[in-house]
Image (tube, rainbow, N blue to C red):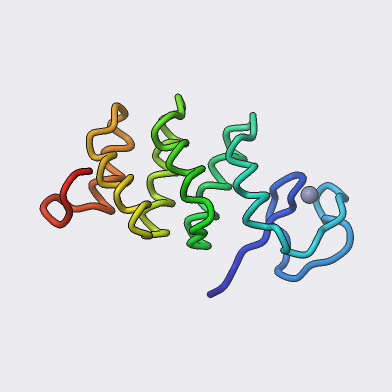
Length: 129
Ligand SMILES: [Zn+2]
């Protein structure tokens, strides 16, 4: 699976396996130990774009460890785009807990989220939780 890496300071894309200073902001690039944990923390970033990117990447990584944090964002975020991104990530991760949250989100208060939920949890395939 090809992975895209991001500077953990400025969140811009960097070459896979890059070491040394970030070409964008000069921050030291760490190895990817703890990458998932940092992405989970980034879900709470005050910058909406950073939180969105973190949700997107957690979905791409199928990061099961991120399910509780993503469920919380899906259910509690006041940002429809972040809630929808969390929903999509959960759909991609696909653990039973994630799938249950996605299916429940077919009744989410945000239409944007409901559309994403319906995409990952087609009607009739799974019962609501
Ligand atoms: Zn950087």
